[in-house]
Image (cartoon, rainbow, N blue to C red):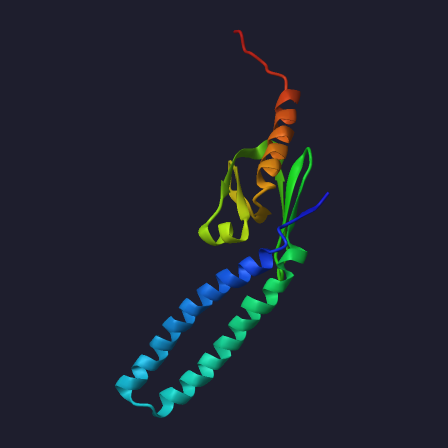
Amino acid sequence: MEKKLAENINKFHLVTRAIGSSIFYIGFIVLIFLPMNLFGEDIFKTLALILLGFIVIILLIFNFVITRFIYKLYGYEINENYLLIKKGVLFRKNSFIPIKRIQHLDKFQGPIQSLFKITTLIIYTAGSNDFIMGIPEDEIDLVIQQIRENLQVYLDSKEVIIDES
């Protein structure tokens, strides 16, 4: 059964993207308008305003319109054989991680995540790692326990062969 992320994941993404965008906007404005003051305002002002307006519109679309779909399109599913992680708004990605390939799990919670009471589960395999961001604080331990139980069922089903030669 597919599980959804925390309902406030969209608000979390809006806040983090607003912080990142404001840092970008400040840097971009300084980068564009500083040469204007050094070399004159003729052509630089017109080009800078057009470029700034275009970038602002693109970033607003990506940062504030697309984040509204995260709760609906992101999710995960755990069963006895695999962990399915669903991500992506424009480009959808479904990652199937076999339970038997999971080496260890980490839970992470940054300062903004703690304000929204959500956590990130990081799943490590031999070849890579993946994550599920937006699991509610009160559910993360249950998710980890479910993955561990499924892994233990797999390990218990394997016969131990001892070479006595």
